[in-house]
Amino acid sequence: MAVQYRFTAIDWNGKKIRGELTATNKTKALEQLQDRNLVLLGLKEQGPFQRAVKNVFLNALYSIGYRSYTSRELMIFCRQFATMLQAGISVLHCLRVLSGQKELACLQNQIGAAALELEQGGSLSSALLCGREKFPAVMVSMVEAGEASGKLDLIMEKMADHFEKQHDFAEKIRSATLYPTFIVLVSIAVTAVLVIFVLPQFAGIFNAMGMEMPAYTRLLLTSAVIFSRYRILFPLLLICLAAGLLYFLKTERGRRLFDRLRLRLPLFGRIYRQAAAARFARIMSTLLASGINLHSALLLSSRVAYNTVLSESIAMLSEALNRGESLAGPMQRDKYFPALLTEMVRIGEDTGTLEHTLNRTALFYEKETAYVVERLGTILEPALLLIVGFFIGLLVFSILSPMYRVFEMM
Image (cartoon, rainbow, N blue to C red; front, side):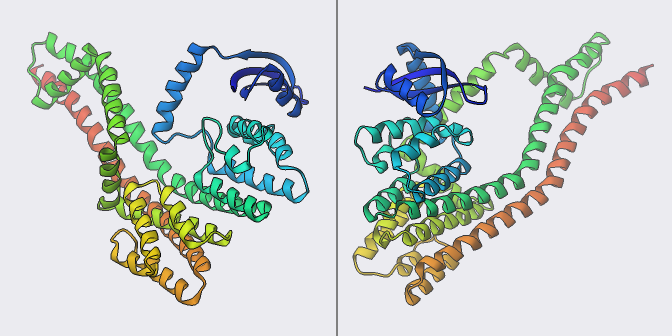
């Protein structure tokens, strides 16, 4: 049975490294550290209580979609893996080398667990499913196909390209939404400081003078007093609400309701559908280019759609394909597939170039989504500034208005 250990070691550059690894016993743990060219300083098995608390915390994070690694780490992993395979290095030795890479620090535990499984006689595809954080399903299926065909190095190259494009797309979206998010957070912080700390100070002065404050000032003061009096209950209430929402979203009904809402939102629903179309086209193109047949590619795409409604739609495409229908016909009848994607699939089926047309469609939707998000961010920036200015101005006016009355009384 595998055991989790915490270790402290020094690499050849003299840098102290702390981390975790999984091994059957301390001897195997020491061998893993030696394979990574680390000098051991301390090795300690995690106790049952510590493991239990950590498992509960990590399971809660994973249930809401948290992953310690990003597409960038996966891209580096696949690219270096392919390079070493092409140089004639064995798969097990590749994993051991990669587990010591500094750029793959977020993947070290998963790579170490995969190396341990492979060392015990498992296949690489099954080894990638070991550990707490499993590798993406599309990567596992691609590796399985590469093992069956003997072209694992080419498969890893294609997966590196796939994760690189996925990373570039995510970075474009993140850069376009960074400034609006910053404005919202700053406005919330400024409003909270004014309401909780500044406004009550002036309220004490006005009450001492026996002045009657305007209705909106009294409302803000009442909110500040309630928050100050029950400052412990509000965070607990927010935590309970968040936990209840997460629990509801984990249920089949809640997940389906949330997924349908994301697809039907007036403005953001269009952006989400375009991003989903780009992801579907990108994954299908990658799978078909790797030699996986259309039916298997559809089944895998349905499992990695990250939306239950879209997963059902993609699964229906697979069922229609089994009935002898083309791919474009059922897509046209489904309201969640964009018209352009359907037409490109039709052209690809007619010309026998489905893989290439899907790749071009993915590029189009990735650029279109990034452009729409960037344009939306440009529009939101002045709108958010106006909203923030309005609320802060209202707060300032709620303070200055009673002060004018004081001056009039004088």
